[in-house]
Image 1 (cartoon, rainbow, N blue to C red):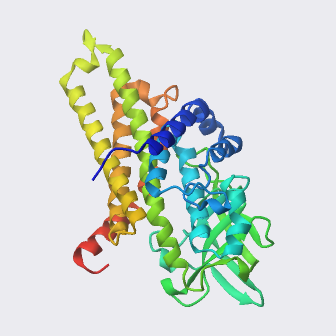
Image 2: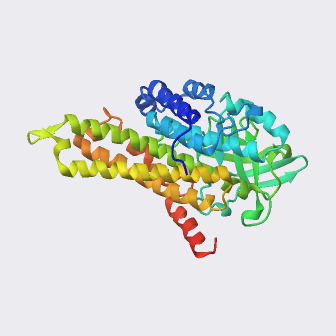
Image 3: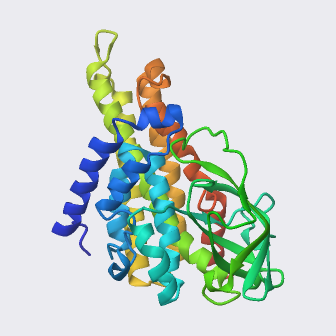
Length: 380
C-alpha cells in the first residue's frame, strides 16, 4: 500500500494546478457573475488532455486511470469548481461511448469530444424521476432504422449548448431492464431545449431541460444492446461520483487556504485570529476532514481501476463523505472570514454556492447511504 503519487501523477497534478491558477481562477468570478460558458478555456484544457482523460488513446483520449483523473479534477476545481464539474460530466459521457460503444461509434464521436471541439452532456434525470432513475418515462419507439423519442430530461448540464447528449430512454417495459442508451446529436429534428435555469451556483455551465418531440434518432446511435442502458448509466455514475467528490476536494482546499491566510492577517482583540485556540481547532478539523475525504476518493478511484467488486460501495461512501465534508469546509471558511466571506469580493462564497449541489447530483447523498446500507445488509 503506497500513498505516494508517482512521478507521472505529480506531473499531471502540477500541470492541472498551473492551468487552474492561470487560466481558471482569475476569470471564475466573471464567469459566475455573467454566466459565461468558457468555451476557449475548456478547449485549452482539452489540449492538455483533460477532455478525454480515461478515453483510450486510439481516438484521441489520454488513456489515464480513474486515480489520475481524481488528482486532476481536484486541482481544476481549486480554480473554478463549476467549470471543473462540467469537464467531469463531459468526461463521463465520453467514457460511456468509449467503454460501451462499437468501433464505428467510438471513431465517429470521440475524437471531437476529446478535443472539446464538441461538448457532451449526460441525460438521465427527468422531471418525475430523480433518485428513482429506473422509473424514467422518456420513450424511444422503433420506426424502421430509427427510434422515435418523446419525453424530457431535467437539470442537464450543457443543455442547449452541448453537441452530444448521451441519453437513457425507455425502449422496453417498466424497470431497469427496459432502458437503453442513445446518443442524440444537437440539431436533430424534434430535439429542443427549455429555458436556461436560474441557479444558486454552477453558473459557468448552462443548465436546461432537454425535450424530445417525435425526435428521430438512428438505431446506429444506440450504445450497447437494448436494455443495457441502466447498467451503463450506473457504471458511469460510479466514476462520476468519484469525480464530483474530487471537485469538492479542490473547492474545499482552496477555501481552507484562504481561511488560513485570513486568520493569520486579520486581528481582533489585539491579536491575530490564528492565536485563538478555537480558530486553531477549527482549522485543524477542516484539514483533517479534507485529508480523510481525499484518501476515500483516491481509494474509490483505485478500486474502480482494479475492477474491485466493492467499487460501487466505495464510490458511494467516498462521494457522500467528500461532498459533505467539502461543503462543510467551505462553509466554515466563510464563517472564519466573517462578513467579508459573505461578499463577492472574495471567492469563498462562490465555492459555497458551487459545492452545495455536489451533495445532490450524481445521486443524492441520501441515495449514497441507501447503496451502502443495501450492501451492508446483503440486499443490494
